Length: 106
Image 1 (cartoon, rainbow, N blue to C red):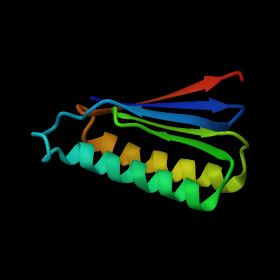
Image 2 (image 1 turned 45 degrees about the vertical axis):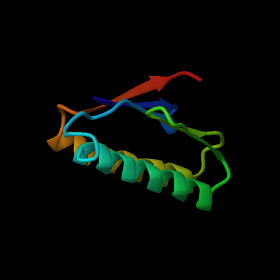
Image 3 (image 1 turned 60 degrees about the horizontal axis):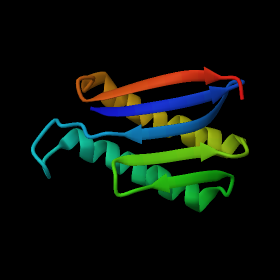
Image 4 (image 1 turned 90 degrees about the vertical axis):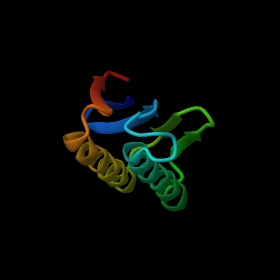
């Protein structure tokens, strides 16, 4: 299963961590994993091209992490857009992807 963890502080998105494998199909034919991967690579590219206030991590392991260092309108909108795309997949593929949003105090 793909796990998406979203941290929110004082109404602002702060961090998104995506881990795991969907397991919805054979290796190379997993459409849920392909969809999530496409969304996240697009997110990394968008944040990298449009803002410098975000830390980005992508590893060989199934891990992608986006951390907002300094919130602004642009990075919040990009984050919201990415989260909306992932929620769209979750609506029809909840067996393979789970999104948890958590309010934090920092």
